[in-house]
Length: 258
Image (cartoon, rainbow, N blue to C red):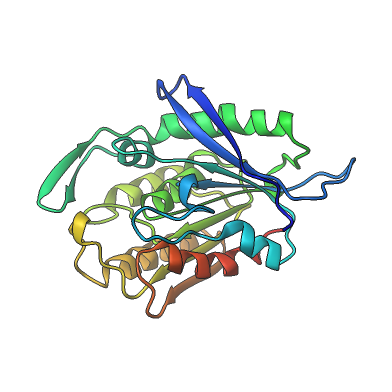
């Protein structure tokens, strides 16, 4: 293996008024004087460890090992009932099965913690390349949304965005489109967009296989119209809404990283 044992921190976020669990994976054989790119990921509990839902993980360190990518990986855990509010930027009534959950958005506060507190801490503790070109962000579903939203709100911070199965809105991405038109997206960053053509989520009321491909196509159009660096926008055949499929898609994203 080229990755050290998982390092776990429970950090207090003054912005969110709660502790956030952060997992750090360091490349083995880090040499004195060398500095490394950093990949930040949402739903950090599933990027290496198996999800309690799908029983699979993103296999992030395994993939980076196979590609010989010595990148520091930082995962921010999500936890119910806070995940929806931390990863979403708009007030919304979100369907979850037969129930409707009212979301009070805290995406801006979450990003303040990530960019204003966590990133400086990681850059202080570890030999990172802290510039935009060597700092990356990725996530799926609502984690895909907050990744795309960060490209609007945190311009100049991240050099590549991995946006997997983005859930821009229920029922549609109109509010995100308004934010995009108001703020613009980071023109210096690379964008990797992916989803499956077989994604339905019964517990969240998504029963259409067109839901994620349509939202991906909308985001693709926004980026193209804004002349952003869209590297990949791909719908993977047969892929479902699961870590097993995101692991396959992640391999393609990881090839873009320095």
